[in-house]
Length: 97
Image (cartoon, rainbow, N blue to C red; front, side, top):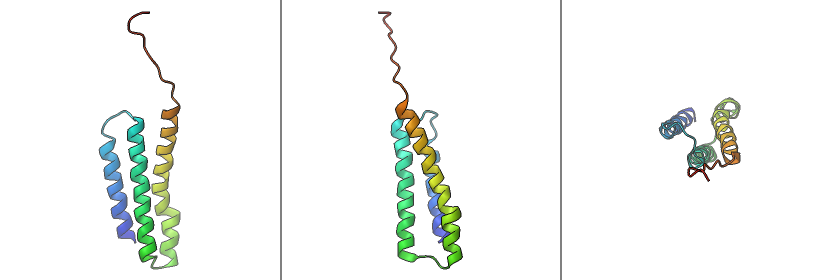
């Protein structure tokens, strides 16, 4: 489980870093982050349902420490999404009317 988790988390962080190259957080990009994270959580869930845990300690470590790292990313990008979608749209009048 640890190897699968570490590989999956590494791929997620690489994908997020690739998308974070630009400085702005457009709503579409934030949605892409959220989609990547949800996809990662889904893959991990599938793996757990298929393989299970080797021990109670492994299960506890996963839910207490490992899963929380990914869920924290989801919470972070959801918060940014809420902020970005609530920002007022500012329009400039370039013609001086």
